[in-house]
Image: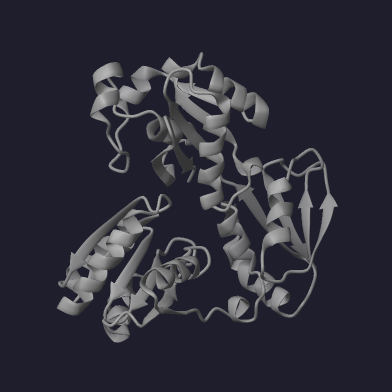
Length: 337
């Protein structure tokens, strides 16, 4: 998640600086940029360039600033509102699909504030279908149906998940077992459903949830054993709160194609690995990757785990877990659009 923090007062700026320091240490936060004052100038840019905007200001200023920019719950960024004294963190926009509610709880914990969440499913301890989709990195093909399904869940109705019987959906079952919010579901198995889809059914209504490709990028020292790479990967996905069965591919650079630790990991997890050609890595450009001068001096590329993950995830993919080191192993995670 790429986050912009904008403040208007000196006191608010202090809160922003303190919050940035805390968020920078979180591997699931890819980038945090600070902005101060000139709200009318900044907001039209922040709204489209960042996954989340944290506004430290009066709610009236915030609401008037974002009102002309709001388009859709599918595309709008998460927007949080914090007061100058950092007493409250309010989830203001895109609570579910944009991840504002989840970010609100994270930020409130970091600055010892009270989180304020007002979405109906959350306050009634029910699991919204859009929350499930966001948590499991699934796209929703027809978001207009979200309201119908969430109202039905609120009213205690049972919904059906229809899946292909040949698809491993352990990640979905684990999620439903562990989630603290309530949802009543049944399962049906239909061979004509694509293996990367989950069809959500109730009466004559349907939502199709489609897996976005999740790619774990791996870099490591020569001869690093499989167990060490596995430990780093497990720590990464645990911080993302996803199951290993949700990972679609592993990736690394072609210079690692004979690295036994990576090959053994691919076999152990039954997840294919893509070794990206050096020329593609040399040509790849992204403002989000960490550039390593050491790697460049040896191989002529600025990194392995982040660019290989982004290239393998496909055009317009983004990082959801930045390069993190684990005893001679580096891990990052990217997701397709």
